[in-house]
Figure 1 (cartoon, one colour):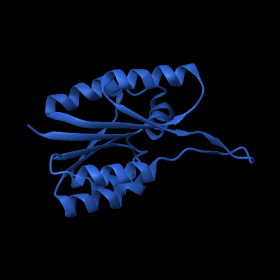
Figure 2 (cartoon, rainbow, N blue to C red):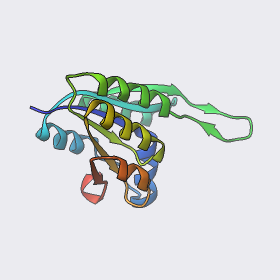
Figure 3 (cartoon, one colour):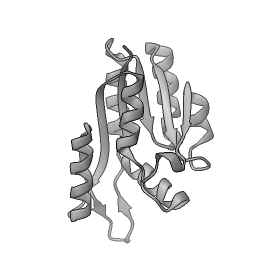
Figure 4 (spheres, rainbow, N blue to C red):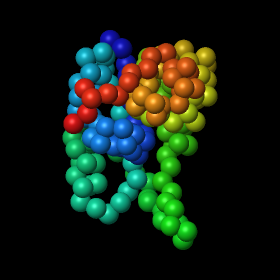
Length: 159
């Protein structure tokens, strides 16, 4: 049975599905798709920690599905902009998973082109299959070209 590791850039998925569809992503449906393909041995969802009930409820739902929820504090800068970026953390965890002989497939939910070099590297270095789920037109072409398999997040994967 195929061994799958899943990594979700929660902020990216939230904002891209909201901007294009005005709807939320259906993580439970994704989970059902993935377990039909193999054994999910690792599933991390990377989110920003905010003190609001909706966020806590969402994080609890992710944990109930089977995700490890990793949180980083939300940083509000004095100029009004905000910071909450998990790219380095996601990269480190994907590198570790790809190096694990127990993992066959790395699944990344993000449209962020910054991950293209990472996917190219782990395919070449470790021979793992890479899969990306991203919103069409908001997923970097470089990421689509770097992965073995690209799945468009469309209406069927939304709540």
